[in-house]
Every structure is written in C-alpha cells, then in structure tokens.
Image (cartoon, rainbow, N blue to C red):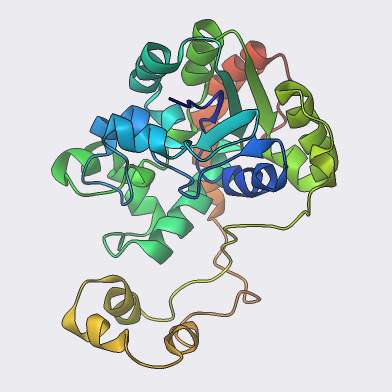
Length: 287
C-alpha cells in the first residue's frame, strides 16, 4: 500500500493551493487530484465540508497510481485540528513523514478567509465584524457550517506549530509573504526540504485567487443553493459567463478592513505571534 511521505497541513488561505499546483508540476512529486482529502481530521469536518475522504482504503487509493519518489497531499484543516491530525497521522504514517506548514499574517488571513466563505458559502451572511463577535458559538449551533468561519481561531498558530515540531522529526515552516515576494526562493526552500532538484523551475501562476464578490445577496443565494432554479440553470448554454456577469469585477476594489477591526485583531494576535516567532526562530513583522 502506497502512503504519502509528506503533508502540507495548512494554514488555510495562506497559499497552499498554489504550492499544491507547483509541486504537482514536478516529475518526482505526486499530488492526488483531490487536493484536500482531510482524511486525518475526517471526524472533525464531517458534514461541514464537501469532498472528505472517510474510508482508509479510499484514502490510500489516491496514491496507488504514483510512480514518483515523493507523494503528498494538502489538507489545511490538519493545522487547525492539530491534536486529532497529529495523533492520526502518527498512527498511520509514523513520525518521519515530512510536514510543511505555510503561515500568513493572521490579520490578513482572517479577512481573506471571510471573503472566501462569503463568496462560496450561502450560510455566511454576516458582516466580518459580526462574524468575529459571534465566532465562538457558530460551529456549536450549526453542525453543517464550515470550520472556515473560525476566522479568529484559525490564526492562532503557535500551539499547533509547537505540537507539530515536537511530534515529527521533519517540520518546515514557511511564510506566505515569501511566496508572494520571491516564489523562486520559496520553492527552493521547499525543494531543499523535500530533497528534490529543480522545483523552482516550475511555472509560477497564482491559484485560488479571490478579488471578487457577489453584486447582490439574492444572486449569491440563487447560485450557491441547491434550489430547483439552480438545477434548471445548469442546462443553460454558457452558464459560467452568465454567472460571472453577476459578480463584481476582479479589478474592482473590495471593501477594505475597518481600521478599528484591524486594531482589535492586532491586539488579539500579538501574544501568539510572539510565541510563534520563538518556536520558528523568525522575526515576524506582522501588523
């Protein structure tokens, strides 16, 4: 049975999709078509997200066609639900599997996550500020709500990073800022960690880019819900062009975060960032 020998465990909205596609281009690296099987936290995300792999045989079948020396997958909830993930990963893969963690300024990550959920999940109808205020009880009240709405909690990285570094022999923590500013150097660091050559020669292209929003809440509900109208629209020729006309242009500037909200988040994350800096031995100038 073929098993992955490295995992990208998060964080969500920190460039993991781009990294997945870059790694997928390399001839010595196999990444399954399903980017995020979430197998090692399946019980935590059950009924909350689509395309979760629950069965052990189904999970390992994702890698059965691999002929490459490196096999990996990228499930971002492995970082958020780190206790469950670490226990399950060690049980099935051992503690020598390589772990890659990509981290982003938690203030920017939280707002990016909110924009992502607002675009793609009909259940998100709150303002960013109201979502932050109600965060602690949202998952408890709604068993079908995505964990991505934990905009605050998902940016508290320090304990998760510490736990991974203590549990596994090979853990690499890299920064989203470096991916954005110098993708070649970023990929060089990943390549050195995975012990492959030429990773920085892959085609650099941004993936999972946001930058748009629905023009009206009704249109979002119409196109994201499971309504009969949506089902009927599936048969309309050129549907994707019709849908795109109901979205704001990616060139239009989205509403920036309120200054008071940013100030609150800066204070909220300050202590965790200090701890994280110590754990990864990097000075993090996140504001």
